[in-house]
View (cartoon, rainbow over the protein chains, first blue to last red):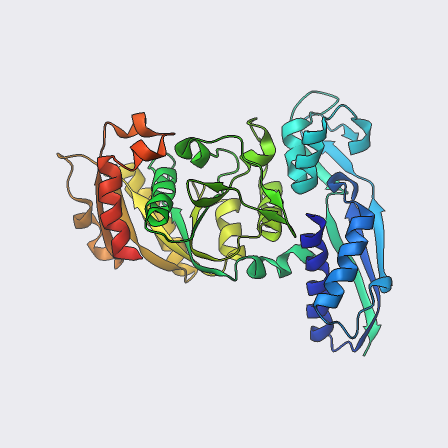
Length: 137
Length: 240
């Protein structure tokens, strides 16, 4: 369950930020999950719940973590064409699996649909990112 | 904010020693020194890991003679064992295909791999560094805080000059330097030790050019029988 490692990263970061900002009770955490990484949201939520218990968290309820899936945008560095990950559905299961673990491996398995180069940029929708943390001081 | 950055130290917290094998120039034998150092320590019963951080030109797996490596998923990914070494390389995710990658995306990929890899308890983790002082080298310095550097140089003036520049940067950044190891020494070449006196860094010894080493690449039992491995064992004793 690779999602566990990323869910742990979210919980630990929220802890650290809450300490830095003297937050006593977390009220909202917005987490953006990039389409490219193909995170299973149910597994991710399950992991968040479990990790929260491991860290014996008194001030963070997993329910306040809001998960938002962000569409991907890929842009060719050569011809400038833009496209989304979902536009290319030819990938095999193991290729998708690699992108799930390390989204940048998209450069191994995908090519610009305009000019065929692997030299493109992941503009958005890459992986797990904490947008904001709100709480009561 | 990037949540991955807060767990990298945790992933490495049970690793006693993290040794980057570097040297600046490509082709000086960083990968063979990293892989063979890991092998000789594993041979002695140490718990050893090897991380191939050369994403665009990974080759440690060729030295170890393996290409079908799949990490287990367990609260992240657990490096597969190869010849007693916990081995992590991007080849597990690239299906043997080339990976052309720009700097910022190399940084993201390094961060991801470090954040999800569960190394467990190790006595030594060797990091096979990519050549140069670009994004991967700077990211490794930024993200793997306890890393100590083993620098490889050859009798080549070119390699020595590049290694010295890397050393200068590492010293400036206050990184720990284990020492310098000379690789591919030829009988007729001037001892590298003489050229390092002003650097104030331990000289760990010389590994002679071994004409039979190439034949042993990919065959670990044969690799461990080479003159290269014999001399490396002595050098490793000087820095562990």
